Length: 207
Picture 1 (cartoon, one colour):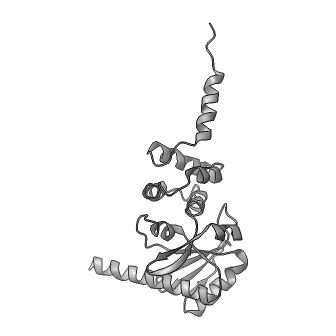
Picture 2 (cartoon, one colour):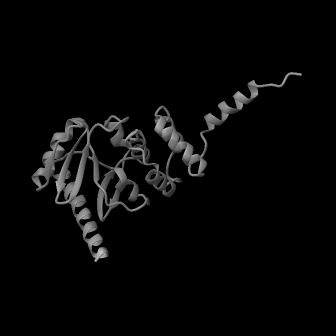
Picture 3 (cartoon, one colour):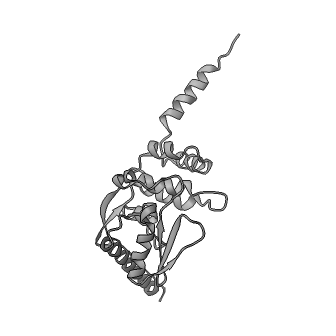
């Protein structure tokens, strides 16, 4: 019974993905698939959570209208950086102002097109996906376990130096890298190692 319910849930998730991608294409709204599904599509752990689509701020209203036109129920939450659309029980997030990332032509140029669930989908670059997840961590949302699991599964595909450089000013991201380096998932930043060596050279024993 539980397996049947899980299969039905996945079918609904897949159907919503295909419906959303088709709606955006018909409305000529550029989007990038982000979030956990963009990680799963590259070989990460399975997910059945929300569908995250990234758009430019000027395209956000058109993106929401496109989903409403195919029968989804719109929601404009007070946060002001995303819209939501419900396709039955499946939630689609339209994100136009993710923390630490401005949605520009450059972000779209870094993306890539892959086949996901038998359809062609434009996806965020892996570094952009992880950067948005790391920069979204705060005192109220600080679950490293899922991030570590996803990073471990894709560690050979991630440009760790780029990701670290983009997020190193955020303390919650630095804590993630401490865990990732300690577990052997991410290599220590060469610049950090050089700085550490210089610090050691400054200390000399004097007889």
